[in-house]
Length: 289
Image (tube, rainbow, N blue to C red; front, top):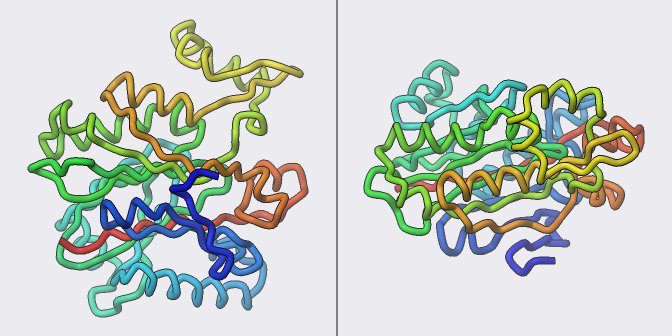
């Protein structure tokens, strides 16, 4: 287990210590299902579970000292959002939450470029096999103070969400190639390549052009009429190739294997019938300036 990823047996939470120590980003992953369980209100099976999730959501907000919580709904399409002050104020006003701190705001996005401003808030993602990439700058650019959060699964990598996100950040904040090369990404637990596969039929449909096949070639392995895909490896490779980013910190935890030990959730295990449908929460605290 990497030193920079800690699982607290007392709280049932996991986190990256250096992300908070070096960059001021509080971060928590609801790891132990006995203590946290499914964290998606929409997937709750009983009213009691809904109330439990509400209580746990409030507990997480106290841990990050956040006044508001922006929850990414991660639609199938690559959807990007810049959370700057005008956008945050609009979302709070639109949700009628100006006077009700502690409430959640749903945001339709797979990727968020989040600015720090005077009110601390948190970003929440609910994966169940996908990775969450949390990007921070090792040297703060002149035009941006904040964090990049990306929900990364094979569909998002296929759609080049990781590339498009940083292109948007560069265009919005006048970031230079030198700025982008100083990004460091922390990568939460995700399903490892030996357990994540797509059928030959689906792969042939997606990789209909030779250029797409070449793009994927190094990160797929064909066996038993399936393609096993290393989507995180592909994302890391393309981030380095496109922007010179080479600093990645991984948890070393596979969601599929952890789910067998009553930790995290795996959508693949759910499809196999060995785990209920649910998600764990990845919480990123965006502290005030």
